[in-house]
Image (cartoon, rainbow, N blue to C red; front, side):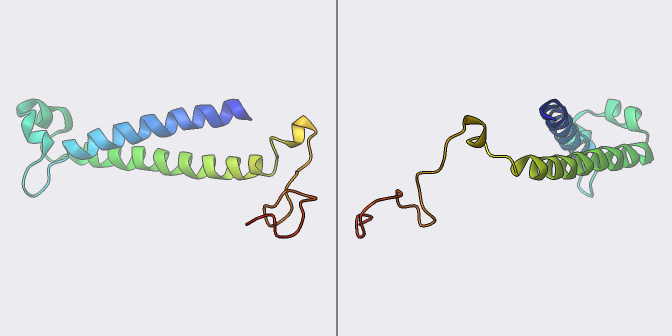
Length: 107
């Protein structure tokens, strides 16, 4: 399960970086990073930029799905305790005071 979560984190980070670049390449009302590339930016995605909008939506979908999947898998893993595998028991009671401590020793 750890391998799957690690791969999802890699996909998540790559999608985030690609999403940043693609959003910056899009032409806004006042231009944008795509203008800095000049004609190369327009030739890559076309004048109407319909392709870049579809690509952005695809990357955003991958980003969202990977984020939700990471969350769900981490919640399933969250039920396990790392201390449980060591066989140790908690030395704190519910209030965070060491078990067996005399009353008033938390001050």
